[in-house]
Length: 70
Image 1 (cartoon, rainbow, N blue to C red):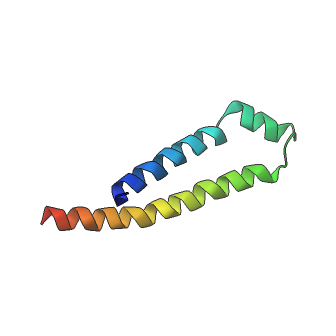
Image 2: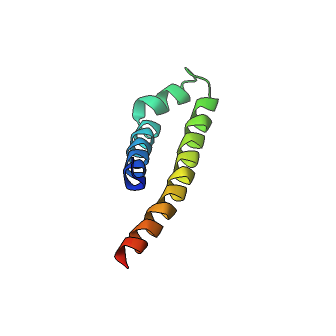
């Protein structure tokens, strides 16, 4: 899998997880304490670490793009 494909997959995952984090039902589960309150923290952590990984891959994609452009 090429770095750009990896980045696209990460981005897709990020958008899906972000949609869950903003979903009304997810927020109600947390507000009504039907699930462990730490779940919101864990989901936030997932988004944070996924964006960190995306940043690392973005650097590779940019370097490769710049090399190909020359």
